[in-house]
Length: 326
Ligand code: SF4
Image (cartoon, rainbow, N blue to C red; front, side, top):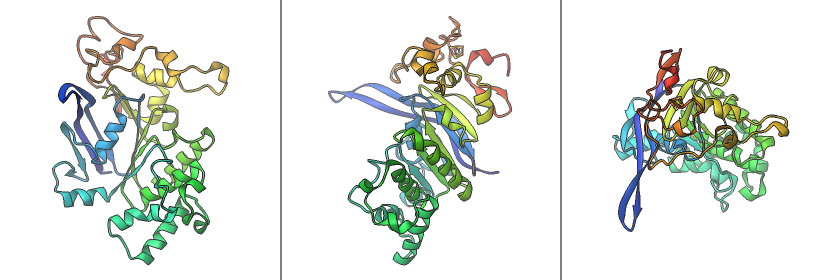
């Protein structure tokens, strides 16, 4: 297997301005490294505001890193010229959280799905028609003629997200960033859309980053999980191993907060872990999870930042509890 996407020491910072003065810096992503092999799916999991969406935007070339590098198929995306960047972007697709706002309500489904082909000058109008109809079939909007000339408001939320997926795959990308693709959908159709994404990922051999706040959904199709907290990866490893035997207290808390099928036993994440996610402007000293951690060791966890310890084959955790396992 060869690496398609490689992230090295990525930092994405945003200045906080007040009255035209910079009064602080939001460290949305703060020193993250990972390599994705071709055909691999990485689930990036964490609470809202942990930096996972910013990480996804950086992979799409939509935000500039403050430091670090992102390589796509060996090319560093922030050092190529505009023409080379356009060529890279043609090979990358995106599915966003909100199928209501990500589709232009004035365009037919046909025009929405065809748009990337037009923008990148791919195919003749006749070829494009064939490709659009095939993409609609790939996402199970069949018969395609029944959907192609409708407008987004004429179809359901799940069907809109299928349209968004068709648009993402129309130019046959090799890499997809799917940012909370099922969060806005009814619970009843979330699994359907996740399984569809998995089917398409396998059929097209796509490499994928699946961004979610819901660690339970990662099991549907990710090969590895990266758990993010306050701008950093705190755990990384094969999905099955991490879900079965989490090595970081934060991952354990995310798993403990997976809703129980019996509503009487359900606990919210805040009840499980307590406290609030930290500020990304002034994160806690040492381990950023220490104010919420039930295993906090005073003088150690608040004094220095735990490195990512190796805790098994392809498994890493940023917690001092693993210090003597590695
Ligand atoms: Fe908890 Fe300390 Fe591990 Fe951080 S380093 S997760 S505070 S035990």
